[in-house]
Length: 254
Ligand code: FPP
Image: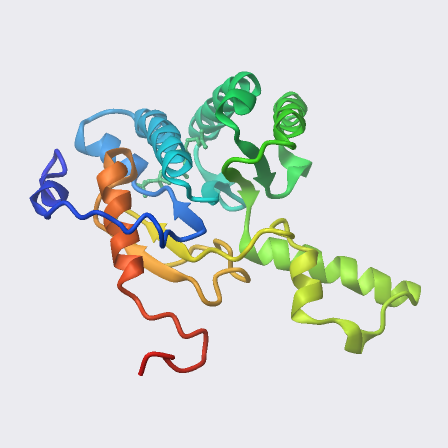
């Protein structure tokens, strides 16, 4: 791909069927560092543009009627990045949360954070909880921002809680079902993602929504996240709409 993302613009424009949208779209916002490097900019500049892309895509999803959007903003492994980069990402998140506190009601956004909150700075955590509280009665799009999130960590914590109930005698091991495990995840109450998008050419799941992605459709593109736009999302949705989802069964039309 060229410096200015020529490849995606060469592709024909595709229009999704707005009556058959995926209910839940999840995105691994990848490629910010490479986008910056290509422009001889610091990696943090890529995250800054990436956070604008997130706003643009969340607004578009809300406008067209996607009901749930989940984004991977910071993983349990991302703490190993240089301190300055971690601080910059946390700063961008803080900026977004501050804006959200003012705008979630007007935009009808139900905002939630998924992840382990124990390592989040108290000041940011307080803002996150304030934003969640302000948005909890909103009926438009549900936006889930995964922060200090790891799929294995999420499942491990759920198993620990269930083990405590078993130890306390309030739960029998044979009563542990997939549904019960699901109720102990950050995503409790949210339908599984229909479509998971990973930009930037990487083809792996990177510990994102491990449990919830059992029957998700994946869409991979070489476009880097800062270059991702509404048309690219349309392409992902059109691709999703061409798939035959069988959930382990057979195609009813065949
Ligand atoms: C992955 O790209 C991106 C991240 C680890 C951070 C994502 C954070 C944001 C987009 C900003 C804050 C988010 C919100 C919701 C306001 P990478 O750095 O791994 O890219 P590379 O693989 O090209 O190095």
